[in-house]
Image (cartoon, rainbow, N blue to C red; front, top):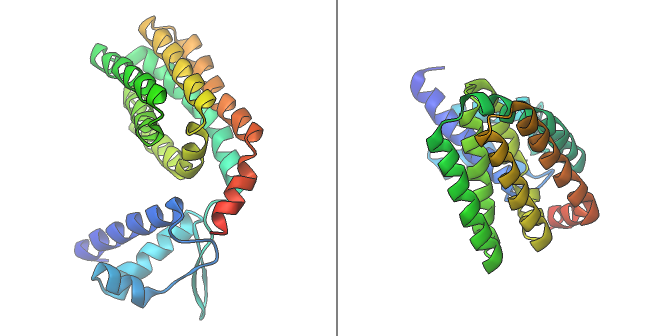
Length: 224
């Protein structure tokens, strides 16, 4: 594939993935090459390549002589992702304790301050954005581009569940408090504490998801 087609397929891939993860495209919905090509103003070649990439990620299934269909993210996928993240986030925070800069620590503390403010105001959309920002700073601070890439993808994959859980005042407050403890450990350069706290942060999210009956909420949303 030429460079131009590669960049086009990458653009289509990221857009389609965002549509699937955000729920714009529902499970079992057919993704038609012609319609997608017209939407993005590209030929079928980059669309076909984008669909192949989505199939590799498990978000789409391609049935020969029939078409491409959305698989999406299942409740089991969500739980698996959080279980995996609980371990990788711990590793990330442990490494960050060794490499984080003062500037990054200040960024994290400002993030927590803003998160507290928006939690008190009930501005939960801003809180979701700040949560993403907090973790992205932490991923950069790990000093590992590979780990950052993996965790950023996982964090993005569960965006819809995060919107549900962070819209709950108790979880939002607890999330901010957990973030604060992680930052305190990072300031102390306490690798073991940072790792344990980041791991527990993800496990607490799973526990909260179970308490709020997130699987039923997920199924209801999938059916919209």
